[in-house]
Image (cartoon, rainbow, N blue to C red; front, side, top):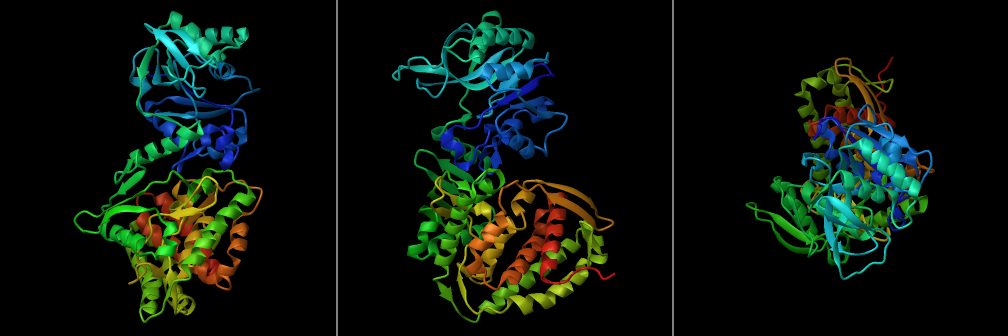
Length: 548
């Protein structure tokens, strides 16, 4: 295809009502497996030097806020002056464009490159006729008939538009759109009428794709989630016919611990994990086959959903119920104190030693650290402070209960009605224990999402300016705009569980951020924000400010 072309993504309307449980969201920012639709669509074009125009109307402000990080020279969010049909939206989009265009509907992901196809083209699939899609007949590249809101014969298979089109002569297509919009053909959308007209002058290649994922309809959305997830992970395969996920891992020790956690849960709390069909804890080839759920993770809902206050209360209450259920199972023995020391002090010290070997952090150990204008002690002095604070504050428990061990939002799945949860990817080890551990650690993992905004950090949803040589970090999390304080809602829900241990939980939360820094060497930006966040949270617990 020509080197210069424009990608048009129409996303003027909200997703259908049946998908609005996550909020009144336009399709382009609708969540799919820890990402949003835009991420998948843009992946198809980002290496092609193409400009991308996203055309919005309903809740355009949400799109602008959500995509603020990526909007720039190549990507623009454009607002329609008024809402009509799809043809009007596309006409507005290409009004002043002369280069060839690719039109990719916001609820359509096709993992085949249409730009590699020469000339005018579009993707299609075949299916039995229904009211879900728009079907067509074609002959020698000319669209001869379009079935759009016509009487439907459900016993006939026909070709259907999946929602990706390549138009070479934008000028001619614009004229076809103008004619179609003016004619106001009640039998079909003006976009498809224009396509019919355009193909008579410029025959279009209809290309079959088997890599189409429809996220605009509830039944197809959940199947698309499943398919896309299966492709994203090297160590996961999904049998979509049976709904079975098979997982392997290169980190065999951790993975075997994870499998054993699933297996060792008492029978009356097994409801919280996926059903296990088969497994092996052999070190040669460990694996687990389990039931697959196309549920949303709390991570997705936290970052990308637009949930009501009551929905969040329901979710937090579900999590709280599981935590309380786990607390019914306890253990008391002489290994608790060594486990606390290993998890809180030894692990933190080891991670700091690892950081010391990274030249980018040398100054942070030796000089005062400035975070968002506040001066904190160098890390060498903070280590000394922690060696005193950790034993004093965290070695005071003599009872462990069942813990997940990595209860962050990404590992908690919620059904579509927010009525029950499943947990995945347990830690499987707390010191020498397999399913038991410190309940405060469980809460701290939740805190590091809802309070520390860990989920925003790993998704690059922050602004950052740092200077390693000056040990200076300025950052701002691009938090969600909500009508309520979600952290307060969380704190209120877990008030009984937190009790008088808030400072202790915050200390563990700070340790989580500080100890994970060397594990994120792939992104110095993530590391800097984690360091800044960890120090700010730690300062709530112990005074680590530099004396003037």
